[in-house]
Length: 109
Image (cartoon, rainbow, N blue to C red; front, top):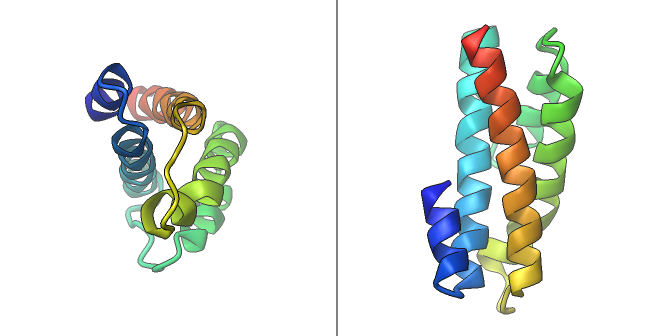
């Protein structure tokens, strides 16, 4: 999340948003490996949502909710020729942080 925070501090919403997306995907990969022994191989990351839902983890709803919010914005942030606003970046950062917090808690148990 340091890259997200740095992007926000520097006023670079694109950097913050892209880092929030990537941090979220990486955190979910760690969660899935921990709980299922595998990570998603799907190109669109929808498989990740399905795997999270099938994990049996008590945090699967929370993690899935925040992942969905991040993935809803992924294509816009990473591929569209549109500047991301600082409000968008902060919103993605909020969901990424909540997702990471939920994953960390699951990995610690």
